[in-house]
Length: 155
View 1 (cartoon, rainbow, N blue to C red):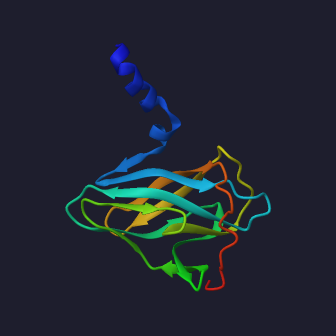
View 2: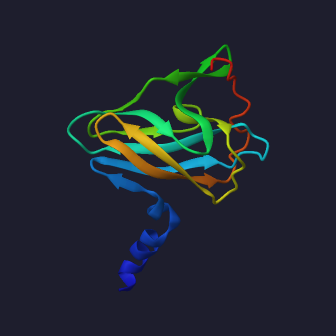
View 3: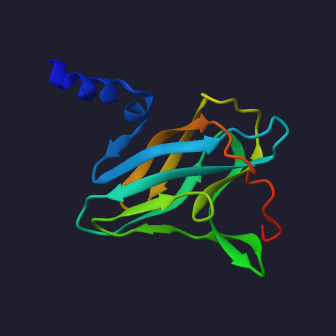
């Protein structure tokens, strides 16, 4: 039993409980760095693994937390980080795609209210083949700098 204790502790941790498997997809730790109380936007991150034999595509994100939730990628032009919208995010068969700071992410625009560290924000990920998958984005500690300093003029 003692050899099983580390595994049991891992399974009981909030992170393990926060991952979600839906069919061939594994959604790993959807999270939002704790936005400032006055923030009108926030970024969402996660990893998505596709254990299926066919590619999958994330085509929409919906949440009551924001007026709009869209997929973006970060592009650096002349030393300035700019965001570009994505129509879809393809997750190739047998691969994992990471949504992370400085790269692909979900952009929550027009926040409906404040979020505090530890809150769970409901959202629906819509996939081309798998359909709708209900998730919760955990509000994690702020990661310094924040996403609000990026150029959002392309929206």
